[in-house]
Amino acid sequence: MCRSFFTETRLYMTDTSLTIDTILRPELTHCRVSGSSKKRILEFIAGQVGKHYPELSEAQTFNNLVARERLGSTGIGQGIAIPHCRLDDCKQVIGSLVTLDQGVAFDAIDNQPVDILFALIVPKEATSEHLELLSQLAEKFNERSFCDQLRQCTDGESLYRRMIEQT
Image (tube, rainbow, N blue to C red):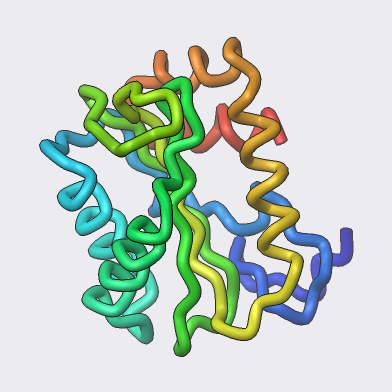
């Protein structure tokens, strides 16, 4: 993979090979977060994205994540959700991995509470690249042993390493 398209671990849309390890930053990887509802978790994610990408509006990120959830839950089952949205001012694909201290209702397809979320924030003009990322994530999270390993992590650093090592 050509590293000339990367700054730190942020991927710019000039590269066509999006992978999990190129869009996830340690600062956006959080372990055992407390959250009482889907809304609170999405607010947390939007807040963290806004903190590390100040050019992006926290409110717009949150509103777009909620709007996408209204179209249908991004809870894919077995305690996993992949919330995602497009943003006008977003220039690169951004990933955020969050595990929860307790599962929350997320209207998942299996009606089970969600305790692992991988959020994707993508540029408004993003094409099929982000769909490939969604596919990669769904495939990875379909491995029960991998999800169990993520759930056993006790801090953001170990969670980040586990996610990157497995990609």
